[in-house]
Length: 414
Length: 164
View 1 (cartoon, chains in turn purple, brown):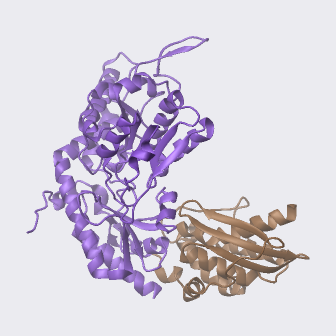
View 2 (cartoon, helix red, strand yellow):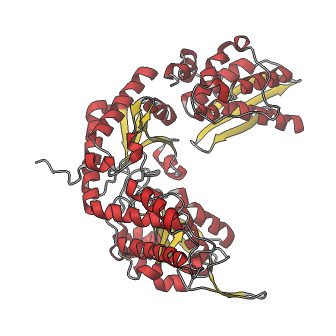
View 3 (cartoon, chains in turn orange, yellow):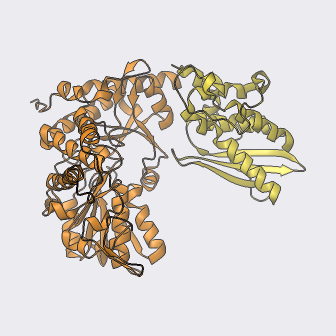
């Protein structure tokens, strides 16, 4: 039985101006959405429209345009909150620069206020540096014990020792979906166990929020971090969602305008969350763009995006196996419900840089390198992979061109 | 559009498949120096045996792409046995070859790298032997860092030895 793709990709592709470009005289085949997605016209024109008609600084002016800009900015906050099922969208969404800054905010603000020497923080072997280095930095200054949930041979988390690893933990910080392996982690299970152990659960949603239906309550998260530019929005804005009660107890992260209630030469009183964590002029146009991206994704339907990307991921894995055989290795789990559209590839013993170089001749955009996950690379026994990642605008032709390019690698490298 | 053949010359693929001077030397007496490309994770480890102002022996370990590995292999073959002055002169000439000039690129790439004095002295590529095979790399500016990885490590090693 063939499952029908709920998305008409031909129609979707017309919304993305960059997809009509050519690279090396070939139509672009964009397979790097895990790094950064493309933006639909709707997002670009929302930002243009904002700059052309409504731009003013937020939370400051009393004139009509400034008031309208503030409405748009705060409206984006509520919209993003509803998109991830936040219980209190207006109070729980903090706009940051990106997911990395959101995770640094948690480690520095919540972490410094609540963690002491020898406290235990549990991470996984598959974390992106964004959810690893902030904790390593905090461990250096506070003296934490870091523990790691291991991965198994298929690139899934091995939860056999979960309860022992969680014993005494204050924080469990995990990715919901690996940016290297495509593994969709069982966050609700881990969060449940973490809460029973008394830990706070921090989820890196940079890969999951753009590609899965997100509900923070179902996830069991206490904090969730993600970036707009991986979900068809602009660069320069990210999101930290945190439970209102936790945010209320946290000290400011960055100091400056907009985050205070009162300031004297002797001291200051911080504003309420979320503004407490948004020092300085925020990314206003970017918030407008992010809201338009949320509208776009909601319009297509996240459940449709999930179905489309799962079909295409399965097609890609099977086609790579069938047409390239043992020459091609795909890291991560086999097709299935816990398999996202991130395909880290090895082809024979050709280095990832060389793969990407040859693929570029075919217009195929993939990312070579360690994908900001060096410990995971070491665990996999490689220094780099070539990563092809799928977005809602990709189709089977993109995968076929990828395979055509990989076949040519064999010709160049003999 | 630059051709892949400009990048993947036969000499380069040969040095990639069969790298010369592979391995490490015992430290001491050899001097060890590492080079990293943080963007892609490529690593090179050089072992340098410098005695009486001469690079008596050089070994290369590490891993990386065809360009970084072949460039290291070609470098080792070119500098082994040379005096330090000759080695430094070769490094200068090589890095000049690896310098991008917008004028020499036929498209809109703007990754131009110029030294402080503006135009570098012209070099005679014909005098560079097998190293000349790497000149196609400048047409792929992203890969210049791959080609210069082991050369930068060599300079660092020589500087460390000079100040020791």
